Length: 271
Length: 309
Image (cartoon, rainbow over all chains, first blue to last red; front, side, top):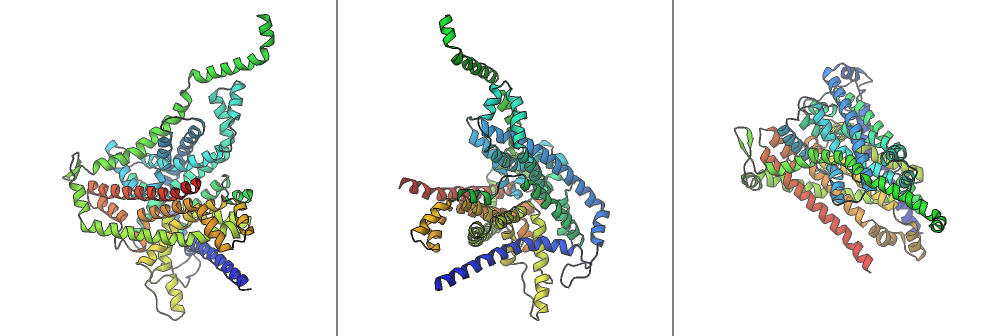
């Protein structure tokens, strides 16, 4: 009996831990969303009544509109280029053996592991020597350097399920390597390409420190928020925050929908 | 000749075909990989590797009348290494990151275990989604939300006062800082460990149970050794994220005391002390590289021993 009791207690402890972590992850997001509809200037309890005034104020703020437009351009540009580069990198890793392959892989994979405070400073110092900083294009260029890593990871995972015989079969039937790439490999990778497009957009949409260093006067939305946060308490922040949160959560959810990474499946198939 | 030809076709035809294919394929053997690889290589070299190399170069440069000038002096290095604010920030950042790594692992290991072994397939998928979303969405906003929750007149304190107690100074200390950093590290660490747990062969667990192992023994002798590598990876990732983070120290403790990332941004902002900020950046990168190599080494060590046995 004591064994059963301790098992029961341990189970309760485990489920409590999971519930606590779920609460820990959900709380900040809920707080932002809930208080964006609060009539009070300072977000606290008791709740000051339902109001849409802060959301309205956000849509009337020209700086926020400009920042949103910049974020849209940067996110879209990053998503397109990072997906293309990520596919190229993943295919090369899948198909070819060459000297320096490890180095090539590291060059693509490592950027997200470097703290953005250092990377942002380094990028600004270098790009300003080239006269490339202070533009939306510069932000895209730097975001791509980071997002390509995620794009490559997702697409490489998909290519891992691609039979190694399919391409030689197409070649034997007379298709050129380029035609094979576009008619056989790319269609197979389509879900992964969609996933990496949305994930790259999410990575870019969320990144603020590099955008802040490299963008100059061109603020993206997170940079605008960072600048607002460093000023006084501004109830608009919750309203923009809610919009940003919804967009980035949707981007990630769509991306996840198209990936084949499901730990649950892996676990059940091995049993 | 005719005899040979008559006997050969079935063998020869595919051979010539393969020869043709080879010829076409090797006519420009390097074109495809070069066309695909060159843009990636160039992009990562120009926008990632070159800035970091330049960061190292700049540490030896000098600033004269607010302008960077090429030089070769160790002046910046000695100035930073022997400056007390830097040494304090280094010790503090290290301490914060080690504490955060420990907390992350203490929470993430049992959490990942429960997610992998105690939840139904549906709940497990939901949990994975719940962990992936925060990794890629609005870290800065979530820290701001914690600020609202923990501030002196914030949600938690309002609730405490409603209960008739005195408010707590939640914001501005190690507690708030760790809440912020765990927001960053916990989802990633749990994901790494869940993936590792799901890669374990369930037959091993069953075998151990059939041999009479109790759950605690299974965890200690079967599960933990199997995810040793992932544990070190989760730990070093948590260290890396908390060591380099800029947002949590900024909002949760108001940059007091400053961490190394805060020091970098402040040094860059307050005038053109680029070389000195670069020195701090290079030292941080060196520390992170060492931590990763060490974790990798420790994670692998056992595997080789186990293989040898």
